Image 1: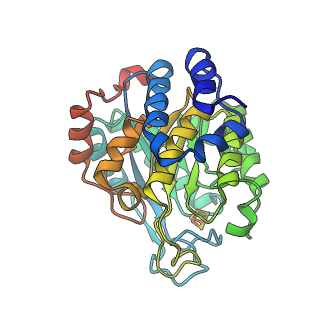
Image 2: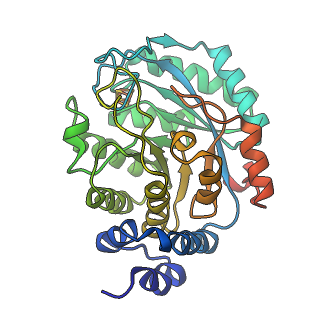
Length: 331
Ligand code: SF4
């Protein structure tokens, strides 16, 4: 096999065709001294196929905690002793969160609920919330409500939800070690319904769950096969009380190798920093990732862990001369 970065230079950069599983694995296995070269190439690919803009998103939790599923990384599962308990947000609070998010310059506002899938109460609450936000705030609304039926997908489209997040979380071969209450295939089925509905598909996962490097490569190409509009990349923040509570965080160099590898697998996709980058990468690593293939961020707080203040991220983008994507460009 030719050198993988030479291959990527000939294939991914000029043609926008992502690396296959063997290629992604080779990038993930590069020695430390070649990491800067990999990040530089991933950055060139991002600039060539996505441009310099960075998409900014805020997220809010409509229903927190008490989830019946057992995703082993998640402090919102009711199956573990982690301290997050069930809480609902009301519509005025939702609108206020959307307003604050829009003030940061964000174009995306994602409403999230910790559930297996939405019940009637949640769909009603969401419908009221989305209508109120659309009446008062100029921002795209996304949702993340777990697994959906075809009817629920149609309802979200009617409400004007333009993007749906549902993460595959990890490689298909590793998923049963992380979740036992539902299957990877069930998640895939929801994603297929979302794709067919015309909503944008947002699908990513968490690295550092104990998956092997080969499984990390497997996951990247499984995501590429889905061809999502956006891939949120999380790095595990071990949460006390969860089965993964004692796992060490991913090594920063491995996280950066993964950013470069995922960009080279997914040259045209929005690749978003989601949870865990503060713990795994710190400030310097955050910058390296933005110069290594990442082109979207979540501002403010995540669902169960605190993020960096929005201003710190926006200042960094300014310093890197990466303009925040404007709302008009996304409509
Ligand atoms: S990741 Fe989602 S489905 Fe899994 S336990 Fe957490 S809230 Fe529930």
